[in-house]
Length: 117
Image (tube, rainbow, N blue to C red; front, side, top):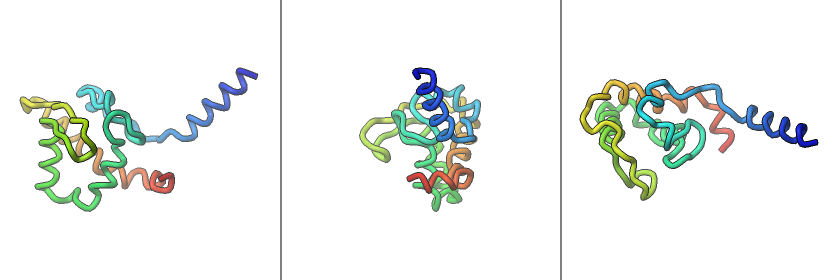
């Protein structure tokens, strides 16, 4: 009986997981410590970020602002808990640009997620 319960629990988890994984650069920078693609960890789910900023993602000034915020950290957009700086010296700028692009496209890649909300 315990095995059946464990099996059913694993199947439920597998059925709810998404097919998109975090890019390698996210792991290198440590984003997975506070973020997941489809659920809140410490920071917001990246799909929620993508959905919130969907209408602004083609605005270069806004994009640059997000890259800056990820690099230097910030507080207030998603609650009171601050996001720690990920690249205050600018050495990982290209990786952060790649990650911000990835996050902003998630709402296009995961349209079925909106049906789960």
